[in-house]
Length: 424
Image (tube, rainbow, N blue to C red; front, side, top):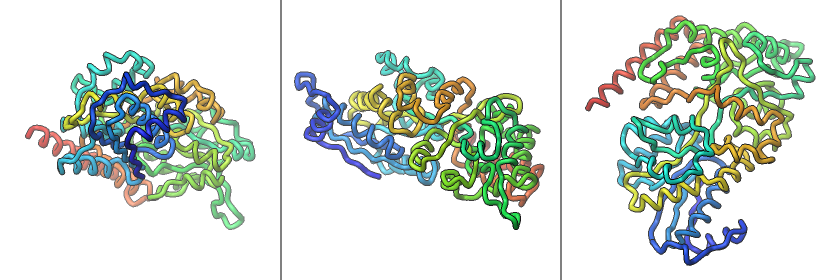
């Protein structure tokens, strides 16, 4: 997905369409090119285009080349792409990326600290402070937050009504399990025609199960494995048993079950707000609920942010582009179009955000009970190790007891390699 925004003509046209007026006396006559590497889907693309148009009101002679990556192959591939751009001497000026990559990029010193810029722009008080907390490294802030997603239980209300299952609220693991059993249907031959739940296949979607049990696969400061915590094995056993004992979910595969959820073939899945675009198109009668609690109701959060490359020839102008990309106007447009939860609280209070699903206020209400997805500087390797072993445990190819030991060893070996690299 590639869109190039250039010249004054487009800026004037879009500005007129947005009801904006150009003020030539305020325009900066600096000429040049800025490269913007961002990510997302159609919800982000339109808002980015309009943000660039507003930016071009002030900088009519700055050509902005915009590339939007859909992240079809995960953040590991995106990291490889960005690092290859820097290694080739052809990086972008502004990067949009996600927390899974922050530590990897920050530890390599690729971006400029933005603390002075943020201090000069009081409008950023509209963002929840937790988002900036997770955007820092060694006392400096390198990313300006944009949208975020916390994993919730997305459920089909029509299927709940049909099965006579109450809509979830403040539920426990066992209550969730019983609901999934009641929501699973089989034909006369015993073949499943409707699954109660999709046991997740992706790292981000799995994390709430650990967090709601007061644990995590790696330790709190993301420097070592935590796989030998008994609560980790307990969590994995619970998911395993949903598949092999209760038979409410298939074995996790490479492909997610979004399409099956939209078609009413699975009643519950773990997802973020981005799924709403597809759900509205499919006319799914769905809602969201907090994740079930074992020791708490905590869940995981992942979010994006914009950074300015150290190599930019126009760093101050690049910061102004970041300012427009994270402005209230941009955030409200992205919020109305769907996609992630906006970083600005004001953008989560507009009617379009609150219209769907019925429990839309839960997104922000749950924010105090979220933890960032563990994202060490070796995230790509850590994720691959965890998912490979998780898949084997969920498929009954290795026992939970042996699986956590093997994962623990592999993770700690990875962290030792990271520590050695960081010393050099």
